[in-house]
Image (cartoon, rainbow, N blue to C red; front, side):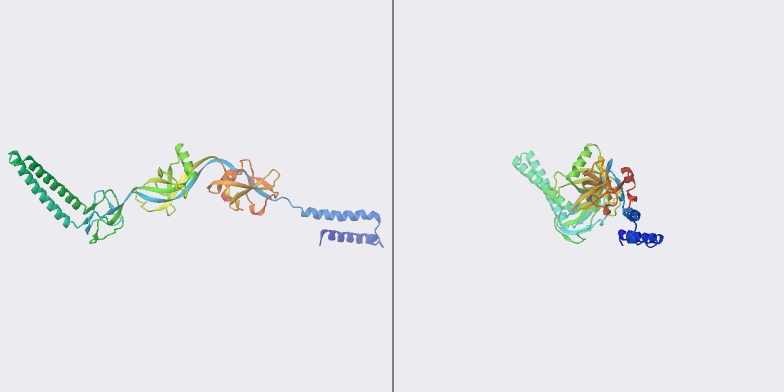
Length: 388
């Protein structure tokens, strides 16, 4: 039933009451002096109901951007590599006679690792040694005759050349014999064997790999804008130290240092490769691991806003700014680096702007609200406590 109908009924009830006071009076023929009284009753009832339906503007918390110096952490997928990681290959053809180490074993520089059956090469050394000794004896005899003027100087020179050739052939034979022994060129860890004892190996066949894990090189790709920021901070004397988050989400104990940047950007990705060096005293890191590099960047006097105060429409980010009359305006903002619960604002807001902190799903553009202002530093301290 409408408010007017309710008040009309009330008026009729009042007229009936008046009729009971004035017997014989028809409510439709009331005296003129009673009409203002009835009209006042009706209008009073309407005003009462109108007052009940009036709604106040909803109340929501609002705040302003926080202007502050901050440190952000960039995270990059990385690959871990040994400072030295080489292939050990057979230098001569033959049967693999001995394997003197085991897979995963730490070895020292110069340690004997493999021996290829050297019988043939030993025979060649013995033959070359005998020929060198024969040539030496021949040279001495020729020299003695030349000193007595029995033979010409040319014959002496020819004998000497034959002796020098025999010594060279002996050296070659000894080198080939030495190639049958594979030794470690540096301290490191033996990888998986690619041949077993008794296998016939050809020259240049892969036997295993050797890794020096005392220090590790960690490679990661950095976008151009962040590269420029890094160079700016490097010039200021900081920003070269990085951390490594391993595959189990734990941080590696040692900090790394950026020691190299490649010469060129990759035109297909817009990235450039960085290399960080980490000490690996306990040998925890191994060649081929993956992880994430954490690199800090220092920002001065930037504007920060809570992430929860923003919303996205068609890949653009917006906030509801509140003007001096409490009217909401949909305002597009461009955000930069992301912190925990916060965005760095590049464009769209000033430090004096006010924006809605909560209730974004309950309002729309040009709505009028009663904004309760909260200081931005207080908002930043209690972001995890706020709930929509």
